[in-house]
Image (cartoon, rainbow, N blue to C red; front, side, top):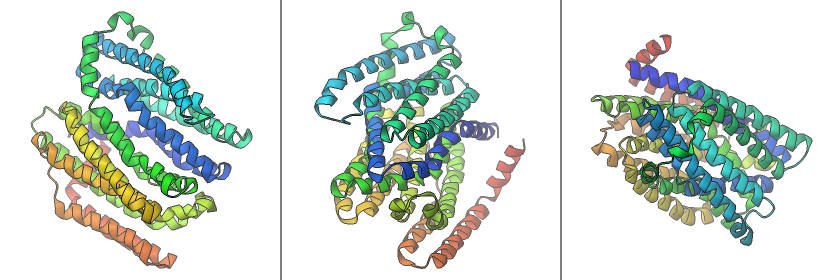
Length: 470
């Protein structure tokens, strides 16, 4: 009971810290679409996409090693300080490499006019990621939450100032990210007492070697996530146009509602997996959590889908209106991305990062192949299906591969039924023309799924209520 309560408690605290930053991506969509053209928004999206590609390569994914090694040494203050000092040392080297990249990227005219901002934001992102992971690892969850709220408010305020009042367009959007990341780093520096922890004399090349050995297999993992999540934009840009890329970027903002909850849960789940991995009843714990998790995700998606054709025209400008039809497919992609991440934590807990590497490589290659086949003929719909199918494949591979470490028991009768209900909603969007009939039918499917999942999880709901009351 205690481990379930801790998981829920951590999820709630992470929700406070993350909800604002995730919600801002949705709430600010009307601002972006009214004060930026689809072409401008497409450029901004590609900017962020490219940073997410470069970041794990430049930093050697060291922020992922920070949380794992800090948790291992949490009771040894000197060892914890050594982990942070060596991570910052690696970050400094990475920043120097970023600086050296400037003339190379300038030669290839990458982000011409925005290259300085690109290098600066890339450098800030890696420091912010390291400090965020370290703050979580040392148990300062409340401070982590405060940082998320402050960063959210700052991003929103800066966006309003630079986009609405100063009409800076793309420059204003990027400047708001640079300022909010800078303030976040300063705050976390003092919260973690880095002025006392980070010492040059603590630099240990043997520890750096172990950290890099752990994090290197995660680099291809990050790149494959990028291939599946982000490379699709480049295929759309090449086979369709920049306007379609802007529409696809906006369509991805709606599934962020679901992704917002899964990423929050994933942070809490990661801590629980590391803590419970050596316990004898871990199989039962992981299986029970996953059963509730997948039913919740499918039910939430079934609730979102009926309201899409009502909400999207209200919050999005007319030039982006066609994005609503591909959103349900992207919801499925988010669901299976979440499942893949859920199972992926088993690899990191067992220090088997090679398993993450192999499954990610396969998923990324499937995504690229499907994009080549589907995007030229089916446009944005093909792009959505390529993302969803690649994540499905990745989840299946990880599910069977991790059985040697954890026996994740899934009742496939319930699991398949949930999938069928969501797929039925997606098909009906294409088949039924009348908005009212479509809404009624999809709402009916949602209630069927809700009742089915609640009845099959009656004991779990009772247990959950008891935990929440306590």
